[in-house]
Length: 337
Image (cartoon, rainbow, N blue to C red; front, side, top):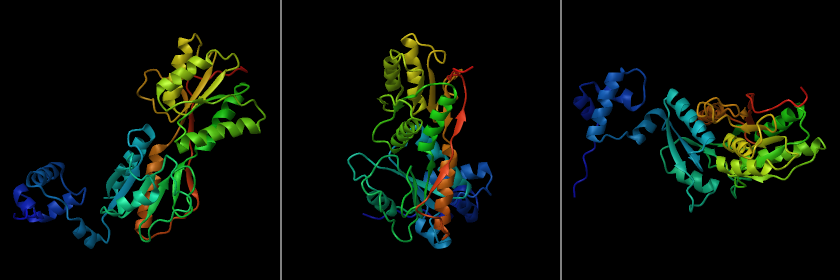
């Protein structure tokens, strides 16, 4: 059986009616090509089955110009926004992005994830570490292979960036206390989530430090239905005047659950969510929330990785914090006014 013929840039240039230099610019993502010419070249690539020669690109640039991204889940709001930001910033710098997920059933460790990504033509990798894994503490990346983590805790040997999940809870509790509430009830995210754990710990510690009663935690799963069930239950607690839900979906579900049980928001119960994920989705949205700046997190992670790939130093053992922003709408009542 004969081997398939390798399609060259000259073949693409002839088929598209352009020079080989133009084909090279399109293959490398250069902006110095007219849109109609780019479309013609890409159509010829697709028709002839052209694939970029990664080895040749690495020889020319000294790098593949490709960053790997590893995630547990690409569908959640925060992860999708982070990934979109990484891809957009990579494209602006003529980098490609290779994405892998930590599949259920596969070994879910940093070592395994990095080992799989090293088999790809990538210069370094960003790992969005939203769940607890066994080898986080003390993990050392391979020599000459940059690894950046997006996670709540600073890693000993890798640069780390994330939002301040703990601090966002502190700010929310302080905000609700300033409105005259005596305590704050919490609808937590799933126990497997590092972010949910940190948000719940921040809520608990802040109430404890203020010497306030700490109500029982209502466990959710990030979905609106779990918030709805918590709202139904909390509607029958006469001491519940303020709820902090660990994301906006659960917060919005809790609002509907409270209303279904005859409670008004914010007249009877105030609610604050996290992420600002419903803006533009729910008409006339009234939910006050703590906006996580996922676009900034993705951008910072990409440029950390790029600097490492270029041989520059990025500190390990410390976490770069991207602060959240309170967005006040109409779901919180000031009891003192």
